[in-house]
Image (cartoon, rainbow, N blue to C red; front, side, top):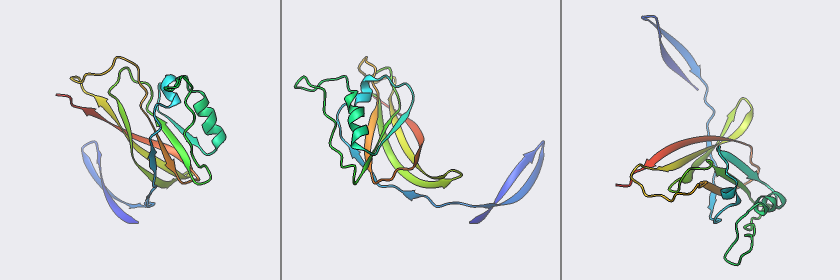
Length: 167
């Protein structure tokens, strides 16, 4: 808890106020990136950022059952194994992009408390190809999956975009 000074401008006049700033400390949430290969979402043309939270094998199997691709044996890929007794999985996509060259990375997860209780703030970075980058001419859907320790509260996204220079 600390006092902060605010300087306000009103039509050429300056006013100074003091306010009490209440902060609730945030805690970092550990996570592990899962290297899963092409996920089912790559064929679903998701246009907006989307988050999935998987806490059961049934939901995980159902999600992967929607995969329209095939593996090197000509079969739909099986759902990667996850021990849902010890971990949950969060999936994040930024949505479909018009070409290749896009990427997605989760930077950190913070546990925070707000008006609606405890939630996780997921900070992510989307990398975007610059104007001089050679990219594939195919729609792509940058997606990342992470394993976390349950339970998973509500998730709030906080993203940033960086442009890759290809000179």
